[in-house]
Length: 186
Image 1 (cartoon, helix red, strand yellow):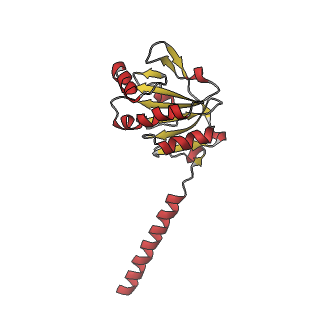
Image 2 (image 1 turned 45 degrees about the vertical axis):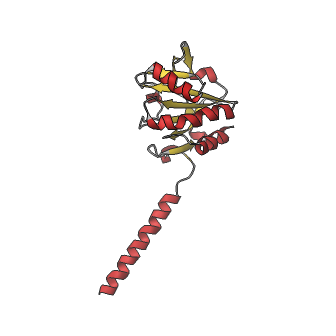
Image 3 (image 1 turned 60 degrees about the horizontal axis):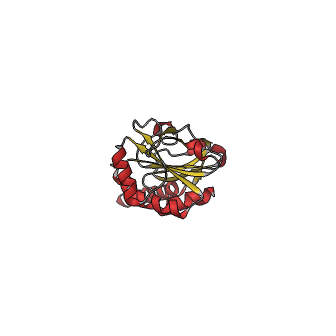
């Protein structure tokens, strides 16, 4: 009887491991529709058929004057939502500042969420980021992105040349995740 129990326990353990392996390897890089795991960290690219127009994002530029995402129509846009007080945002800014220089045909754009203007300007200047930034003091502009229901920071949205949300990076951007996203859009 003890031998039968050990065999049964061993079989259950093996079945559990096999099931976990299947579940972990079933995730693809490009997914569609309801398959999107909204709380999944990292890069998520949408299939072409599932891309929706970017929400109307307009406001005041951190540097002054009006600015909107439509100002950059016809270009691939990397829109990074951040705040100067956000530790992962601080960690990813050097990657974004370097990428801005590495990909001159891609428009980088910031969305400064619930932040102090002076702190944000100093934060960006310290890393040499020169891309334009839209102020989002209440987080209302960020909330327009339905692909980001967690509304956490940082999050980066990838917008294709047709002005559609093509994907997002939830959590801090890495050189690898950003390069993969840009490569898939250019």
